[in-house]
Image 1 (spheres, rainbow, N blue to C red):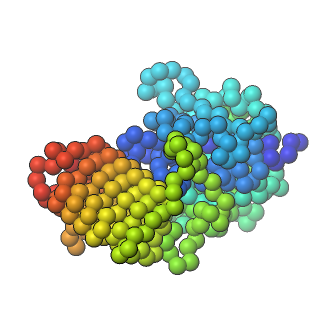
Image 2 (image 1 turned 90 degrees about the vertical axis):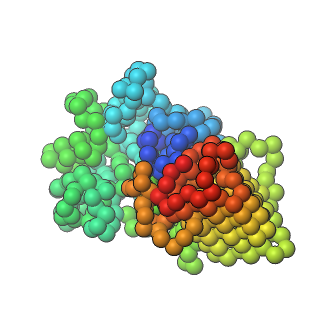
Length: 421
């Protein structure tokens, strides 16, 4: 029997993540910046590192360039050396969209050559788009102790949210005896976290036996429950799928609470600062005379001359004199010019708000975005990467400014609530 550290880790990082809208216009969801210094995938990678596991295959697909640049050699998470490493695994069956991964099980099946080249007792399958801290070593120990074929990480969620998850009913021993994928009617509030431990040979045999099984939750798990040993590993703690704009904003705001459940530094989460490809480290943040900052996270390289309240600023953000930033997430190297205001917004990298402009104007937050009503409906406005908002422009609630919008694209001074440019 191999040691627990030899568990082969496969990290699923290829989803489109379309509900993050302009934030995934040019990047995969796991590479979206989070909490100032980090990217979403840093949490899963750091959990693997902190659990002592040595080798990770990262299954990519959708716009993987920024993710591949971020992963680099894996050195940021100590995945370098003779017996350690990170391997990028793109879809391998062909060149057409129809050859892309058709589901979680299909993604694993397409990488059987990689799996067979790294024999282990167990295969641990993770998602690259969750914010959490977890002792994965303990989960594999639990799996062995139960003599399970499959163990699924599961946690209690509000019944109103269970329709978003795979849901399981367990017996007194923790064995899953019933399963529903994204049920419309809640019979349980025990939800799958998308974290799986499989016995190595068991998974290979299962994938080979039925090539029509494309997805774990929809196909493979229900079949396995009917005949094999499938257990729920109980998780208690902070965990959030940040696959929507609302969830992404809320998770960032969770960082700012008086007694936050989430603390990347205390959790031992590592970023890869070298992926910014800067010639030198950014200098410490500067707070000039007259600036005011409260309940906020300010990263290195920021220059603050105005007011920042309850907001998360990534490295290099410049806030001019007389500016007001509130309840917002501002990503790398954005510029908010003198007298401008940003209220309840998410700004992607290198966007600019001109002098005296307003992003997030008015008190009516209930007019959903007309083009994407399921994405923006609580008042959050989105500013795409490198968008340039002209001086004096007023942008309402639940608005979207697409990436690379230039000043000449703004034909009117006011963009009404729910509009997209």
